[in-house]
Image 1 (cartoon, rainbow, N blue to C red):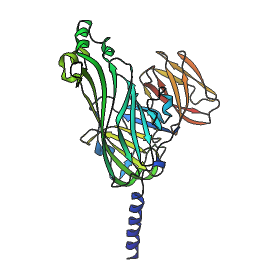
Image 2 (image 1 turned 60 degrees about the vertical axis):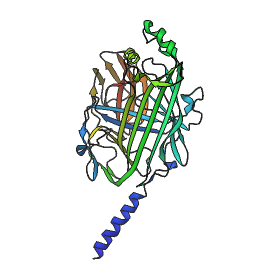
Image 3 (image 1 turned 90 degrees about the vertical axis):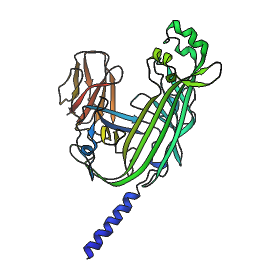
Image 4 (image 1 turned 30 degrees about the vertical axis):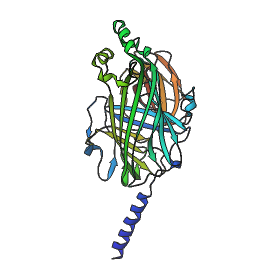
Length: 383
């Protein structure tokens, strides 16, 4: 009987400990924070693994076999580094997304808000600076088991109609500019997040994080609606280009663009970033990418979209990197824990890479093309 009572007490204590995992202001990112991570994904839209093959009960993350693998480091910087005009002066930090957008955040003790987005305008490629007139609350603090929140946000940028002069055929532009005077690029967000599960997560296999972790799961859906709108000179009313088939046909774009991201984020005690995050389809039955902080970097297989070689491997003070079809690539070197320690702009087909100052051990390398897309990668050993 004592054993049964003791077991029951331990279970209760464990449950209380799990529930005490919370996300506080002090837990989230600060300027200069770096989060190395590995990203497993399907590049082809619609492909994925059934969720039961990725998530088990209890949660066990093992070596994954996705067709595309990318290593990167998420860095939180000062907004002034990308916002020279002070448009997002209220932001406390900013970060680049994988898609090339810059997200500007305002983080207080109570909330984390998205207050602006920078990127490139569709079609023209010009800089886009969306200022949120209605900021989006991403998180309320503290976030604990059972808590949830919903919010909407909206940002836009206005430009003169002449921004379309280079992409509207000249025979149409005169009529076009006679009817409209302003283009508005508008982005609406809606978020629904619930902290709906807690328990023990295990990392097994060839992982840098093998072991058990208490986790709190965030179940999140983020809906992004991007639209391009025109203002009529006569009425001053904005309407979507999608409502005008003639103009939409000239721009070759379907508007509004709607992107829904459904994800589970596994927060663990003391981690500023989720230890693991999976993105699913809206039906939550298919997983199309998984992101790990540090884990499974050592199991990253070689991948080769362009032919290359690294020799000698293992190496002492240097190795030679040969790229068959050289075209101004870059080389990035990561520690086995995932921290980026070197970035080298390559100048020729054959490059001698100095590693004399590196500590002995295994390293991961990635070759990037001129668009910063990973085109090859693998591992080398420093003796």
